[in-house]
Image 1 (cartoon, rainbow, N blue to C red):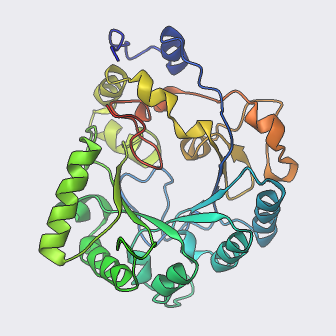
Image 2 (tube, rainbow, N blue to C red):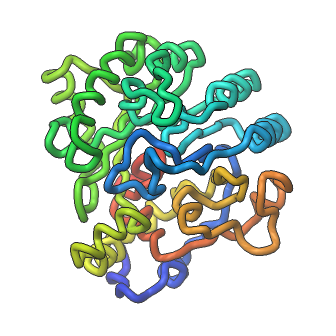
Image 3 (spheres, rainbow, N blue to C red):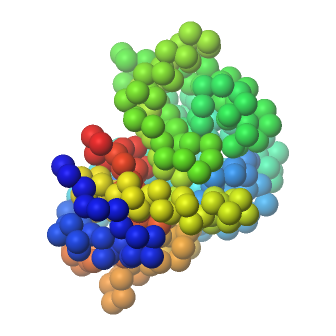
Amino acid sequence: MLLMEPTTAVAGFEETIRGHQLDLNPTAITTLQVNIGKLCNQACKHCHVDAGPKRTEMMTRTGIDRCIEILQENSEISTLDITGGAPELHDDFEYFVGAARNLGKHVIVRHNFTVTLDCHPVTGASMGHLPEFFRDHAIELISSLPYFQEHETDAQRGQGVFEKSIESMRRLNRVGYGRADSGLILNLVYNPVGAYLPPDQAAIEAQFREELRKRHDLVFNNLFVITNMPINRFRHFLERADLYESYMERLIQAFNPVAAEGVMCRTMISVGYDGILYDCDFNQMLNLGVNHGLPGTIWDFDYRRLVQREIVFDSHCFGCTAGAGSSCGGATAGG
């Protein structure tokens, strides 16, 4: 599909989609994505959540029980996507997973690899049982690995993260994850180190697959490429390096209407640790709740009204629509 002339940096996202005559209203709510807390054993440079070992914001048990009720009451929601922080560090993480699986829901966990090898930063408890827990509940894992070499990974995620990630991935492979005949899904996430757009997803996946197999005898199912979103910690990095304006211009010029039609906010609702509802995880971090007048929290969740909402867009949405697109499931278009 031919693209329009590049939009200027000051043009808004809504103006751009109107210019392409795109209808980006929701099509369904098939995924409930729940951020159960900002506590993490890492503090990555690109993290749009600003998660880290000193964060204390956590969803209450009452909030988790309400999310379970929403899953039970709405058969249309087939997937629970649990994120954080490192969601495994929440005291009720395993309870939440078990309840959702008992309802027959597919469960995705955004897993950072190193949490398996690190002790809980608050309680000191071992997390070494997680590979078996994930296996026993047939959890789909999505795990970030910035590169298949140590320098690039540690530059983004911290000293020693690559070595720990490789060992954790080895343990997951050992219990069946990433192996074609096991049914246990291990997907990797690649996002660039720096102010760049990600490369072609198929090409970088093939390179990761070959290098991890050759260097470490490791396997995985799919690799998703995700654009670094110009918000929070990554935006601060861009501004300190005087790169924010040029990065935004790069995103805007790469706008792809095909990618825009596949944005993840059209089929999901994001839930904050405090129960507030958002169109996506990025809006959540910017406190951009669902549009005015609709049910705004899990306590008054109304599927029918929410699926008819208008999605709240802003300039950061150019990150999801640049090039082949970007979402929690990787590219949204073929290019």
